[in-house]
Image (tube, rainbow, N blue to C red):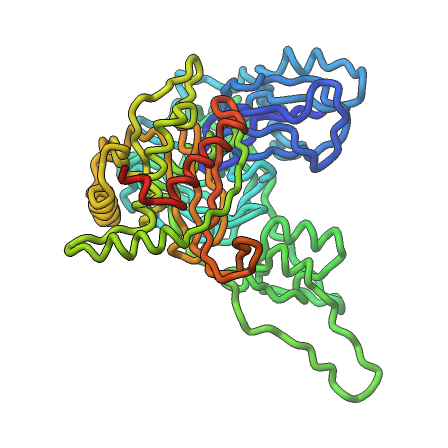
Length: 538
């Protein structure tokens, strides 16, 4: 039977997604766990795997297209299966489909049971439902409330921590008002789209809204109207499951466990009373079920000693800053759109070390190896303008000026201030500019103009002892140079093994603008300047 796959919600704030690429095409066989597509969210580009097996029969969203969460993404089923009804009916939502059997004890609710004109929500009242915080989430558990009934809520405030089948996540409010009603207590679980809370003007009576709200039978804007005046829709009472232990005694103490842990325990026949929870406040989570070993019964009189760990796993959740979100979005876009390739070289640094020592002997002068690399790159780029180019969707720009971005680490992430016309500046001028940028970057004093317009980027981790690494291109630039540490080691010179100093560099290039030979020629020119730095002064 064909399975409809909708656009998943891959982040807690995701409202729509863009298909960056399809890794399967119509007609391909799909196994459970296969990566179907790469989907760009508001935070990053992520791989989306299939939870079904079969043949990919239909693709609903083409590469590059954007669609809202829960829009038809694909259909998987048996080869040759007729799916026309699923495709053409995908935009229609049958309200009765959202009501599970037995959930409503009266007749199934239909469009006729609603009178939107007379059953609208009170003015300003917003119903908040259990969000879908992961692509496989079917229900969530309220781990904690960060707001109480009567509290004023601002847009962006964290309302609660919701435990999904994958993690405990903060859930923020997208509305402002007073918290009028809480539909779930701490530890309670509910299916996605069940009533979570109600926000509105202070003093508003929302008891009828809370009482009549039914998952799937209502939109967030409509309250069901009883079929007859005074008649109230009857629902099944949700009964708490009482766990029975191995000697058939009933435990009256409530067991706190995640939905996934409960499901796994049921499948494995594990009594949750016997499981020690390692989650927050002793909550039983997935790993507790996976690691559970029934207590052994010893035939001897000696007691069985079982090791019980006393440690507790915990973590601190830090909301992503706007800078971190921007870095994630830009670098993910670069990595998944620019065809990167890497060229690795190793330079002899003996002459560079001697040159720097002599140069710094001049009074009131101090340059770094990084300053020398910036200057050398600027001069080499003038001779290889292709490496100094930029890629745009409709054109390639060949820059006649050289503006070099220098990556600087800051507490929130990474910024790239730009040394403009670097080829025209002296080594001390470059050194002063980079030092000034680094200080102001850490104090968040850089202007937007000082971080825009680079034509080439340098990332140096040598001061941290990193010998070799690769970087992601800072688009729209065509290349970025990764600079490692200077390492003292045995080298071969004139047929003899002697002590020497070398430095490894990696050039990442965008193959759309820089061919391999072009990148190699640039590195040869750069090698000449670095290994004979006096040529930079001529």
